[in-house]
Amino acid sequence: MPTNLRWVASVSASCFHAAAAVDAGRSLVEPKLATALAPGVESLRASFDASGVARQRFLRHLVPLSAGIENNRELVSAAWRKSMGAAPDDVIVSPLAAALARLKYDFTSELPGLLDQLELRASPMMEQWEARGPGLLASVGRLTEADLVVEAADVILVYPALGGGGEAHLAYNSVRIEAVLANPHAQLPEVVRLAWLISQLSLDLPKYSEKIEGMRLPRVAALAMIPPVLSAAEQVELARYDDATLRLALQAWGVADTDVENVAGTLDTWWRTYTEASMPFAVALVALDKMLG
Image (cartoon, rainbow, N blue to C red):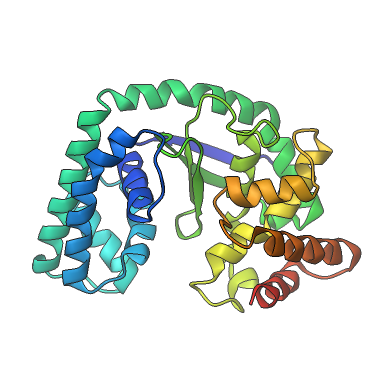
């Protein structure tokens, strides 16, 4: 049964997706947008420093939650509870909410009418997915395990601040992907990136995740699903599974910026071992976690 996708175009998620990229030191396609967001990012950093919570942990929840929560104070409270396991005091909520409000104002000032643009940009990606996506995910299930393919997921469409990017949000059964109008890399169509993101969502099920430390799971999941997705893409003639494409995926999909050769070699060895042996994918996932160190 094909995965049922709910497509969500979000200005707020676009804003915080771009802000998180600036905070991480990544270069945006439009320097003017990075300059506009810089003061708000600095304000956000100052608020985090005062609160004592790790920014990356908070942002990991903030971005996917922002696609469904517009009120800044409610958004801060929800992301804080997810990050810290307790409700925040007002002395924490107020400065963080003010920083988010500034970011959204500066972002929308630079990109007025973005929601309409995102909805227009969604059409080509949705058409490509309907044509090729279900078959691609079905192939991933055959190469791994059928229950790795989720029944439903949200696809959060965001402004292409990086010229192509995305992330799987395992805790929310959602993915976010930049709504680009053309494939940034001809060898890796965006429909393959989307399949890779969606394919990770089941890996937080206890059968797969219980033996992997929680903070390591997102990276292990992201790396583990690259070989099967590229192999599936080769079967449906969308991409190739070879050394060059594997290295390209690691870089283009933001999984490995350094030590690409070693990571690619580890993944290839792991995947070939899995395909030649008879073992549950959960066992293979733990083995990959250990191989990554």
